[in-house]
Image (cartoon, rainbow, N blue to C red; front, side, top):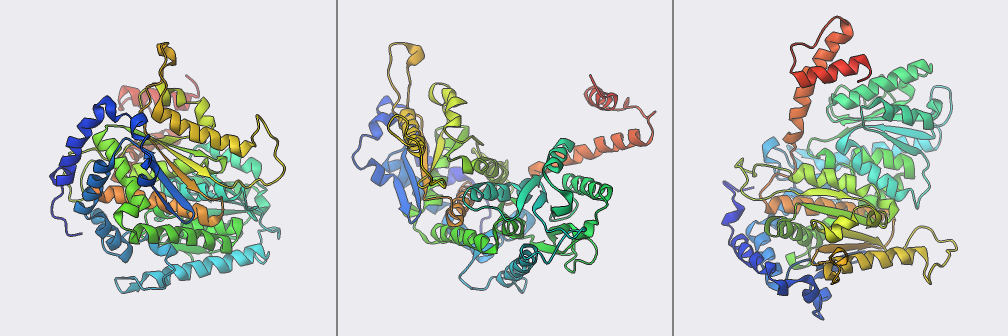
Length: 544
């Protein structure tokens, strides 16, 4: 990317923002005063067709916003984003491009990678998915006993399921699934036990998702599923399909041995960015049809084009990234809550949690230097109004943290609604969403200190039109682009994830000890540290 060394502190804008942030400790800079400005909403919100981002209740003013845009310019954020989209190496530690945007690129251009036409290869996989889906939906492909498929279990962990689960949960409110999806990420045997209670094994397809086809949890669940089918006298070859990298142990495009077929995923698309690849394409097309998956890709592409082409001051993902950086690096907030006022978006936060925290939870810069600034923050959340009756006590009167509210204009339910206190349920939902943002900003003085609200607590509000595939696609791509922009500005690599490896390595040694005990019950754990011995002894004893 042309960077030899990186230190965000060397950017003049970063230094200026550090100075400007000191003024926001002044009581006159309270949000209740800032929001009184007649042009506040106009100056601190951005709308495009089908998507609105309101950051008027963030603790910033025009000079700060101007300086933040300068920071983006000095960090060459838009240049880096453009390089990413065009296929340049932006994942420096793994020497790879990051081409998740290519999975929904409808411009019909070429992106060449080592003489391979990336767009052509992606479209080839999509055609393969479409043909396979049609055979399932037309009941030409059936299970061992000749029954048509009604359900599918997705076996995969992390990015192999979180994005897909979010999109599936969001879309199924408005589109009746043709095939019901179930997700088996956890190696916890009770996760497996609960799923098999809800399926008919004769009509269930199993989708194994692993780039390397060696992921420990996924392989353990695969083996469990194989045993389950064997005990039901069902042929796994007629119930399994794989999504994996070309040439992996699970790659069998002909469908001759490992299952009904395999669909390739690519090294240049990281797991947490992969829902628009075959990772999400096959399960979501099974559930809703390939045409609806295509509509979802169109929504993603719309946001991709906006993120790529819009100037800084009108660029929603870039602006949202700058707001995050302002809150974490200059106002010292350690967390961000994502609160969708829509139960259909209940699985958005877990997806963004991985997307953001795995991408930005870094301790080194793009050039391998120890960071001297704050990187990612803690992401958590719960749908409103549930959250109001859960942790909003802390949000209003405890240690403050920024909140991102999300509203949906038109709900799926369009039947007769009852009126309570003069409003319909959806209107009540919106009244609460609007009021919470206002209450956090303005606060409320009370002589009774237990009832005093200090206010000055920042929030943003995102609005989408509905729960159509296009709207969900825009929302997904917004969070991807914002994460990438934040990473580029902070000088991080948002595409690697070495932080997940240490626990895996340590688990190998412990697994070896458990294996020895399984083989020889006289084996003891005396060579291990006291705590590890304690836990393993309990595991084999079966109780405390």
